[in-house]
Image 1 (tube, rainbow, N blue to C red):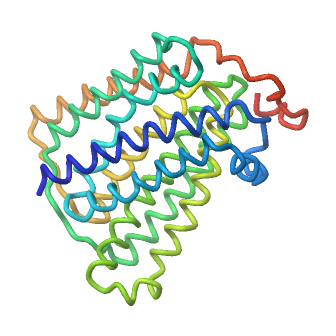
Image 2 (image 1 turned 180 degrees about the vertical axis):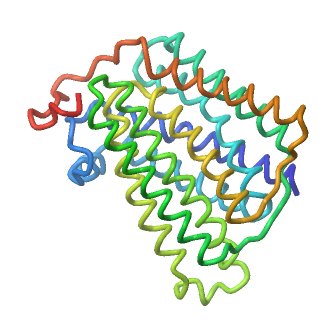
Length: 298
């Protein structure tokens, strides 16, 4: 079942990567909007390439849900990072240019770091339904983390770094959503008629909607690599933390494995730093100017 879960997660990663490149192409060349301005989503709905990206996300979600049903949260989520290797070249094709070298180096380190983590962790299954207390504590910590990251993004003047902070906040929400999705998928297969009676489904919809808005706002700040790298890393890392704490999943903790995990963490950190610093943002399309009321975000 582990091989099936990995295969499904890899397929989901491909769909998510292409979808992200399509959505970024539309969002970055759109007029800059404030962080929670829903008019951004309304304008993006009129971009065919953005709609295609959403369809790709739907396909990815179906594959992702199936992978979570047959595999552990700790196993499935890190595999999704493999889509990073495809997203940057796809963005370059859409922009009719060569991929930036720093972007390729950054996503390569980030991907290698998570692959090493997955190999060292060797995750084992836990429960499918955390307790109410575990959900409450997790929800509060997730909310505080997202708020702090958004405040940091607002105080940051550099486009790529600001986009990275918003990408982190988005990834945290996606990681929380993956935990909700796992529980909802289990309820759907075991008691489908009672799913609307469980709060997890509505929390999943709410967190997913907020994450979608933040996702597109992050894409407006810089090239794809900075926000997508932090977003893609944050999601599985948050999922791993929730898997270990709320779902009682387990990873191997021998000294050798912990050393590999530490090196993997350094590789991921270097990947994030590489993609979010030291490079000028790409040129926006004509007419995609920053709004005067967004000067604080620049």
